[in-house]
Amino acid sequence: MKDDSHSSVGQFDPSVDGTIERGGPGVHGTSADVFGDDKNHQVGHIHNDTLRAVLSLTLYSSQIKYRTLTWPLVAVLMITEIVTYGTLSLPSALAVVGIVPGVILILFLGIFALYTSLVLIRFKNNHLEVHNMGDAGMILFGPIGREILSFGTVLFAVFAVGGQLLAAQSALGSLSDNKLCQMWYTGIFAIPTLLLSLPRTLNFGLSWLSIPAVISILISCVVAMAGAGKNPTPGRTIQTSVSSNFYLAFVSITNPVFAYAGHFMFFPLVSEMRRPQDAKKSAWALGLFSTLFYILFAVVMYVYIGDTVASPAFSSLPVKWQKAAYGLALPNLLVAGTLYNHTAAKIIFIRFFRDSPHLHSHTVTGWFWWTSLVVLANGAAFVLAIGVPIFSYLIGIAAALFASWYTYGLAGAFWIHDTYFFKGGMKALKQRPFMFAINILTIIAGAFICVAGLYAIIKSIVVAYDTRLVGKPFSC
Image (cartoon, rainbow, N blue to C red; front, side):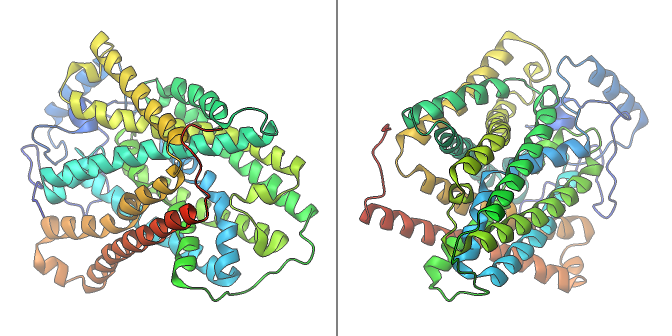
């Protein structure tokens, strides 16, 4: 691993949980403070009062202030991004493996994802220059790691935008009885996604829009559960466990595995927090809410619909209940897609303008390139969604390649790196055999999810072509 743990400002000991809120409450970071120094990628905290005062003066003079988020807003943003359309696939996972293994799996993955999110946040607070997974890759693996993880983050974010557009396509089609060409529904939804992505800071609108977005997905799922309870499937089959081959079992398991995908968003969101040391509260809120909500929704829908439950589960409801559930979910689909689009553009924008006044000032150059990147990310997602017949499978491939590491595997590398460099090298690792083993297993788990996920999804593509389930590009 690459050692970038020394700083001209001062070395930070990860055993200390608190990070310094620079300049006090309400202060917004400079580009080096919020987004790191692109040239040096140095680590450390401000221990000098004079330097802190100078920074504070610079911060208040910035035209565009990024560090505006509080931990509740970060929690709501993360819930909006993670607890979205993927939730609707969980009941079908229970239908394949059975209710007992399914619930155990969702619970285990929720605890696992909570642990890895806390490790990611600790790593971020130990390395204030980290804004995204590419910056973390620079610390762990050098320039090659930076490029690979940066590419993967942007690719996954753009694919996620496309996934939300496809989800909206299904929702709008259901609401209108599919009276329009499917491409029109995608295009209609892409426009507000683009417009809401344009503000440069999250606090301008997205963070507050995430509140009704979370409420919308919550209410839509409650309505769906009510609809299933009022209209249970006659003669339905409910099984405690189901025997299945590896392929079918793992295809179903990928649903809860990737339902927790999205941890890469912690880095950019924590970078824009007023108090990054409060980010762990956001992780706890996300972990508890998502896990309990996933279990409740999956169990109720499976119990009332049985093993014929569809994916997405809303499609198993009577028409009027289906329309109500899809209609209520639209705000969540919109804000989640917007958040992914905003993040994809911001990662590239910060990469090129990190050490430039265009980052914190309203310059023509800055706004031109920011708007161009937002349009490019949105346009790429739209074209992929309507032009690639197997795009829904490609989303799964991107999740297997990158989300398996961002959400699970890399957390083990983060823990090992910081323990080694900050707490005494190999001696520190030997003094913590249990945690060392846990984090080695975390890396192995990420590798397994990556490889097995790729196998299952690629085989699904082959099956889809064999059974002529794959449509034509740019078709209705």
